Amino acid sequence: MAVGDFNRVQRKGDSVHEMSIAQSLLEIVLEAGQQHQLKQVKTIRLQVGEMAAVVPESLTFCFNLISENTIAAGAELEIENIPVVARCSDCGTLFEVENLSFICPQCQAPALELVSGREMSLLNIEGETGDQNGSVEDTGGTEHPAGQ
Amino acid sequence: MVQLKIPVVQNILQANERLAAANRQRFDELGIFAINLMSSPGAGKTSLLEQTVDGLAGRLRMAVIEGDLQTSNDAERIQRKGVQAVQINTDGGCHLDGNMIQIALDALDLKDLDLLVIENVGNLVCPAEFNLGEHEKVTILSVTEGDDKPLKYPLMFQISSVLIVNKIDLLPYIDCDIQKIRDHARQLNPHQHIFEVSCRSGKGLESWLSWLEAKVAEKRKNKA
Image (cartoon, rainbow over all chains, first blue to last red; front, side, top):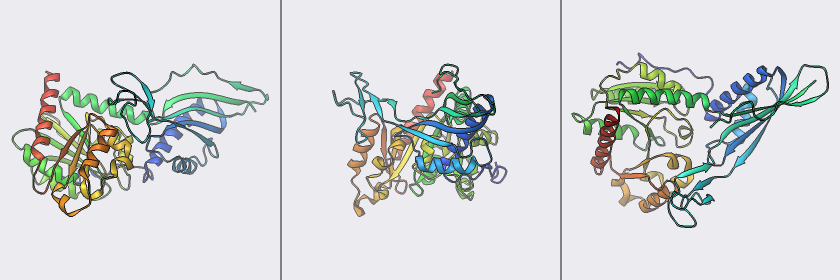
């Protein structure tokens, strides 16, 4: 086909990939916030693997920018770093990957299974509803099955 | 005012993952082998593509999706060789994502295709996080970029099942230890296929082409 028939896929201000990640995060936060009738989101807790290509400061910066004028404006991003852990394909040993070496420290075989370290997950959000009684509720930890 | 704590355990990139899975299903149904070609700018993605198009002429039927910040020069280079090519201009965006590929696929004739090559935006960081639905991730590293790159950009090298080391004809003129590239890449991904090539002289390209042919044959067999 001719060049020009298909030229531009429109993106919103997407010049660093933390912006796309922040955008996806905001969509999930707003949806959850709406579901639970939050008026204001205070805290957003995330897990980010040490192997994920995400700079936490950049993610926070982008999120602050795009969350303006939403219920998530001013929310604090709490980012927990998850170490890189691999499992040896031969002897099954679990080990923390140091110096980016995916070779089993026990038997020197290659470890092909990355157990953790690539996370980019939202864990929970905390916020306030407009209701007037002063109680604190926890909606429990089981209603959403764990993502990937 | 009620304080609520809401568990929302979700992969932040799940929207992209869903689109990638849909693209993957489409490839599988059509028996198309798809690769995601990544590298820093100037490592030789488009040169490798041109060599691949020439080398596979009469052997495989292929199409190309070209990702670029601006311009459609790359797609034009490929189209001149008589291969279907679609350009995605990300307009400043640093990577392709599942949605862009879905749209680009609609602009291609996917019937009777063996191989789809998606050339990502030149960048060793961001494209690593965005699956497009490809079967294999292929990274090109040119020896002029330095032998320290696998350890500087570990995710890219860890997730790529194939590493193509390009511009090996320049090795006599530069301080690059190709053994270091091999060692560090294998340290990150012990089962990685490594091809050492020169797109300029053509050296080493035949084993890359044969690998593609074998993968395409495998895909076809699985479909049949």
